[in-house]
Image (tube, rainbow, N blue to C red; front, side, top):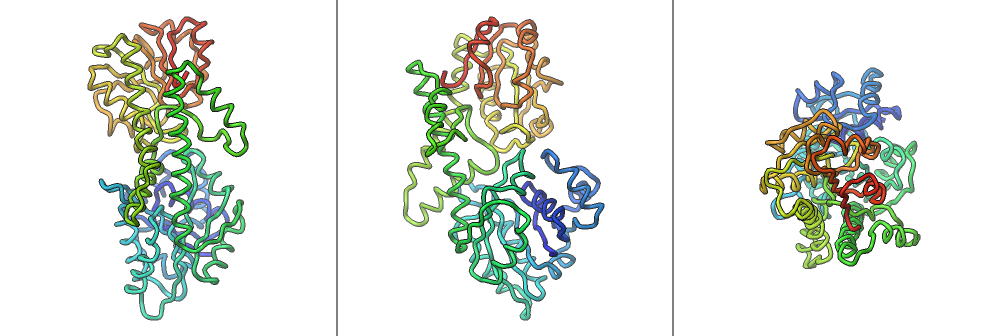
Length: 430
């Protein structure tokens, strides 16, 4: 098939690379010529394991093409995916400006029959509005159907998630659109979930909100466990072995971040309000997530005798999760900013996110490795659970720190082992 992907962010570029690798002629359209030229030249706009190789391979094969010109791609495409950003407004509602702008540009260039699919995360009813725009702006002879195919990829495992998803959700109101989308996705794994368009739109928000509920539940349990002297990790092991619950996402820490969970929880709360429902549960999920970061800051201050003023803190991990350089809504931002306001001196290391972090976090010493971050520190803080942090030479860390104190926001270390080595150790909910 010939398809077009609108947008070259995480969803757009990964989707374009995978569909091209499966043999489709795939256009990837963006707004900025300089960014597109960088991708063509081999420089990816974000870090994702394996992405550079697959993009370069398909550019060389002639299957993956980039442009800012809709007229080059849209008229010849059987399927067009809208994969643009839907950032949150101050109200929590999703900002759909890019979705509707893309729809107008698509409409002007439609030719023959085309399925226009929204893959971006959008509130219920958005696809209907896209359909209205297409109907009003398209050439008279052009025919189209709208569809919804939400994405479920995770940063750091995006390629695998796209090729081997748990499910492929296809929201359609026409048999023809359904058959085309099923044909395109035939080489891709996962259960097929065929729904109407509004149900498809809701599935993505419900999925991300449910995962956020599990994370915030684990964090809420960690607050209680610390007070009563229980070990939250063992508690989560115990309930996670119940097959009705499962262990995945039941991990306490410093809170969730990234481009999806924070905004999607707020967006679903905002959508519910429009339709007259007060989604108290998700409001509390958001509140607990914020509390997880502030609780960690309080813990750091408490362990350093009530004050971090003039204290040097070595921070390990800045990105919101491992295997990505994404700093959007990263807990490290809230934690470091709060500690700086209290007078702390911050030294930080992250394997890939430091360049992005420098744009946001100022007044920090960015170090070449974990050991430089720990050197002469009054405490070392673990904020992102990169695998390399789990394998550090802890005896070396102890020797170079001013005070051997580790405050582990992701519970990556064994408390008994750390205490045996002579560290003052504090995890989350332990």
